[in-house]
Image (cartoon, rainbow, N blue to C red; front, side):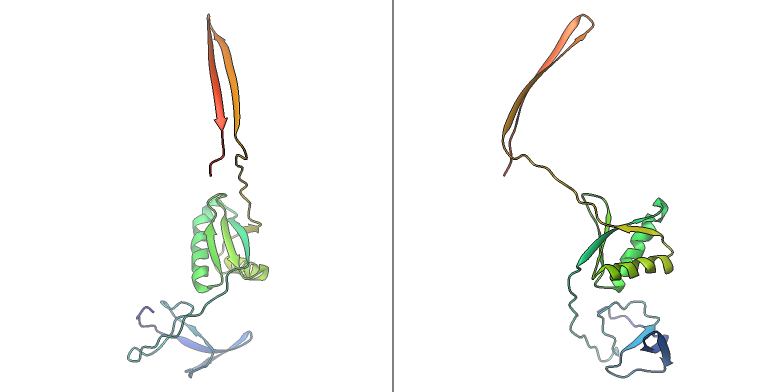
Length: 173
């Protein structure tokens, strides 16, 4: 995808929570590698003289959303940076800011998924955050045409001031 050269520092064969460092891996092996700088989820690693690009993976849409906010205003920029990094690492995790409420909304594959990511924010990025239900922006609209009139009168000094208003409000298609 990028055409850049990657240096792999260590290769691990994973067994649940245990990992065993190995000198190399063969085709079809599922391993964990350390030291990748330019690689993202779904990229193909191959020799430079034999370029190979595998079909990209399709991920399902997110199923649950929660609002997240930093416990302190000073952590807001750090939170946004951390969420962006986490979204690059995990294609099933998305984040955006709701234009109506101003809340930062995180979306994932379930409550447990979002809770794990929230714990990762605390452990890895050292950011304390509050997570809760997103606010709903309620909107009202005109249901039918209405007309109203009103007169405002006030006495300022010796002069009597007044204003008359006639207002007509109607729905727009």
